[in-house]
Length: 241
Image: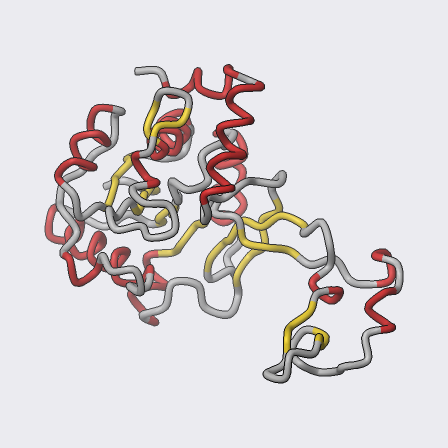
C-alpha cells in the first residue's frame, strides 16, 4: 500500500483557458510538468491523474502517470468541489487494494516545481501530528489589508466593505501584516482525517511557504509561463520523456 500518492486533477472542461491542462507549453502539455515533478519526488509512491477525458488519460500515461479510472461527469463540472474527485479516487483505491496514508494534491495549473520542496512539504506534514492538512502558500506582493472592494453604489471601500475612508490604506506596506495566497504548489491531505470528518482541510491547516508560483487561471497567466520558458528553456528539461 502506498504511503503517499500524488493526485493530479485534470478535468477537460476549463472555461477561463480552454483545455489548459493539455495546452502546449515549451512543447509539452501543461499537466506533464506536474507529472514530471511528482515522478522526481523521493516521497511520492504513485502518480495518479484524475480526469474525465480519454484524451487526457492517454496523454497522462504517455508522460508516466497512472490513470486507473475515469472521473464521472457529475464530479467534473466547473463548480464541482475538490472533495468530490478526492473521495472518488479514494473509494477506487480502497476497492483496488488499499488507501494511502496521505494524498499530495498537485494541481497541473502550477507547473514549475522543485521536487525537493515537495518532499519537504510531505515530511513536514508527516512529522506534525496536530495538523489536519497542509497547504502551500506564498507571500502576496501587497498585503490584502491594502486592497479594496467596490460598493453597490460604485464607491471604493476597504476589504470587507468595512470603511469608505481609505486614508489608512495608503500607509506604507510595512505597516500591515503580511498576507499569503494559496498557490497549488503542493497540498498534503490526511486520508484518515478525510474519512473521519468528510472534510479535506479542517481547522488545523499547516502553512507551507514556498517561493512565488504562477498558477494558470487566465490567458495572461499562460502567456507569462510561455515568456518564462522562452527566457529559460531548461524549465522544460525535467518533462522530457
